[in-house]
Amino acid sequence: MDAVTDIFSTLAIPKNLAGDLSLLLLFVGLSVAFGFIFGRWKLVNILINVYIVVAFLSVLPKEILAFSPYAKSGAFLGLLFFLGMVDDRLFDVHITSAGTDFFWRLFVMSILVTGMLVSVTLAYLPKAMALSYISSTAYGYFASPFALIFWMTIPLLLLLFINNRLK
Image 1: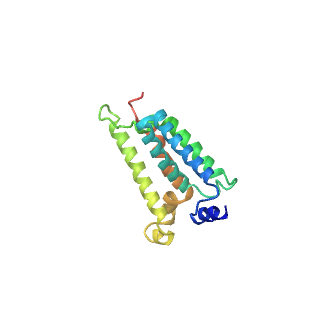
Image 2: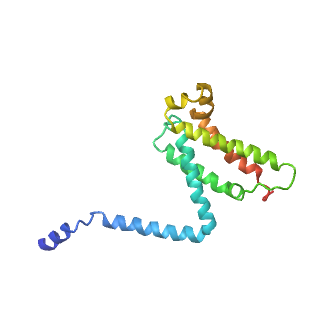
Image 3: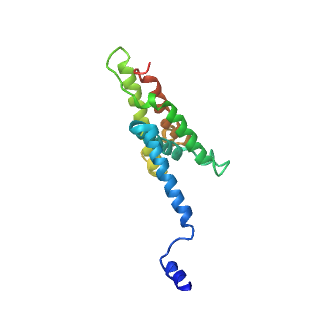
């Protein structure tokens, strides 16, 4: 009996193999269930929502979510649920050329997207380097923690209002 135990101990089989296999089967089962429940297009939307939530949480100041060790994961799931509820309006977006309000929609959205790109770019640069190109006031408008929240949030919220297909 000791010889059999020695053989299995040399194979490097983890002691909690049953738990790992159960987790693997649960993961595969949930994946198949999500595929059948949500379908291809909704799964793509969920994937994009995950990227949006991760990007949004990465710009939040750490102090906002410091009240609990579970706050970041709770915020992740809450924001993912919220985006899942409104993603029909977010991802069915088009800016039609019909009507008189085409140019203001295009103009406002281009300003917000440009602001978001500048904000994220300045936030990733070392502060001393960014301040060598722009003033500290302009840096505050684009790269302060609350400015990052603004530039990441407002374009998403505007997508809810510029879409005409679901109205």
